[in-house]
Length: 138
Length: 138
DNA sequence: TATACAATTTAGAATCATTCTAAATTAAAC
DNA sequence: GTTTAATTTAGAATGATTCTAAATTGTATA
Image (cartoon, rainbow over all chains, first blue to last red; front, side, top):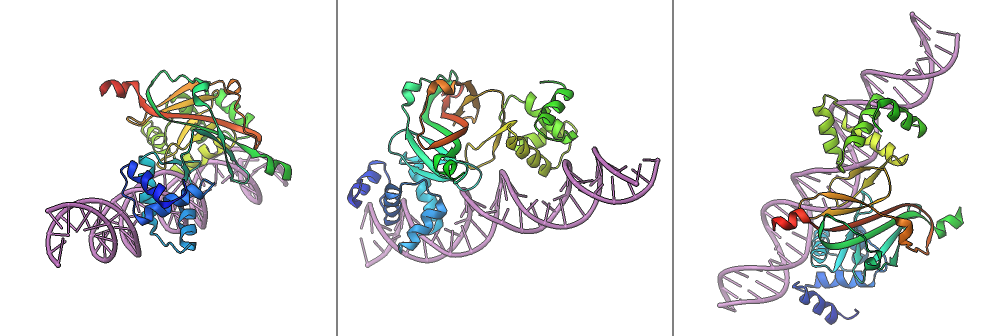
């Protein structure tokens, strides 16, 4: 997923009008190998000369989440983080440095049973602790 | 875990001074089979004639989380929810009615590998969708 | 039992991420 | 080209949580 024409096609396939702002945001998310906050996305785009309104960032990201392009992650009660949806994966959150590590998870193989579940739309796994990098530092 | 003397012993074993307010809150959490918000805890205790300050509720719950008695759950960017820690379990969240269903999970059997993890302190699983009750209603 | 000291509680102010609002701009349709 | 709808925008409003500083309670010591 590289070119703007591909991103345009993706947005249109989801029924989203591909405005310049939305394309910039989607392009950013595809090239960002983090789980950025709104503040970071906003600042990075501004630094690149694309001064979107913060409301636009919120609007577009929320729309992308609704359409299943992104996932929103609430790690704590500070800023939300956004995750581009490639394939199902779990998260390991380092409580020391704040890093978030992705790891593929075969959810079907886990075979978790939730008797009360009528239908399942999204599955998330979060492990928390101290990452190796921080542990080595002591 | 029923009597105040048992709750007192639990708090003391965690190095927490068992004030009346803390005992009331802990007692509430042990008898509450939900995942209540601060607002609900505050309102329910007030209705029982125990008008704690909201700051006290926040202070005590935060302390309990730090000491490993409770777990805080951030489902979305609205109010946090608190979960009494009995044993490891997963959560199914109904996106229709907001209900949260617990289900035991044997995390060790899942055998998830996070190569970057130095040590793991907490493991969480969240599934989201529509619960059977809501699905039957249509 | 009185006094000093520390911890806890409290009300209300402050903070800050997010949402809302209403105007301005842009794109689309006729 | 004009009208209409959608999008963007800045700034105000909201609301959960945290902070602050004073009041209260509990504890230790004389």
